[in-house]
Image (cartoon, rainbow, N blue to C red; front, side, top):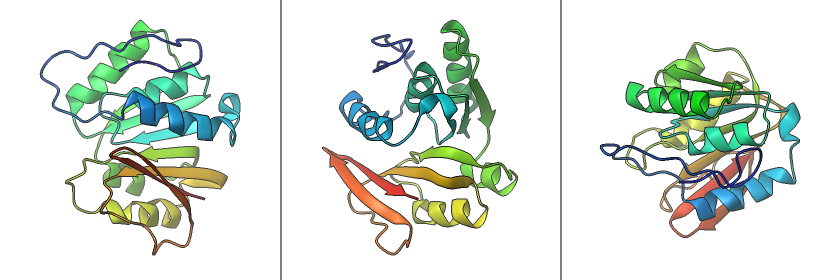
Length: 176
């Protein structure tokens, strides 16, 4: 896993053994950030990374200069890893929270310019994420919600879906 661009471009994120997670591939992450770079000014962006896992998206957002990134994962080993890596890279714009995504959104009334959600592919309820976010007004007007999901899951029923992109086994659905 590496940081694609920004102040830490090319920096490798060394993951200790024992983490059995599925990080977003570098190829898919690079494609995602090429799309976002044409839609947002990272230096004016507040971002939320749900189901953040090892923090590849969080650390990429921080490297690109986002004002604030909140990284949420239910696994304290993940949030500790992200917190320690951000500190090692001197990324003061990263805050980690150990919580379920649903619990965090239910108890939080803030809104973000970018929300990225990458739940485990086998978790139940992924299709409810847009409802949670839009009903709670967690996305700023003009903000972007991106959900990474398996190919068999579609969001065609969600009014605010604007596009779906596929990069190998990685599927991104974009909502506004």
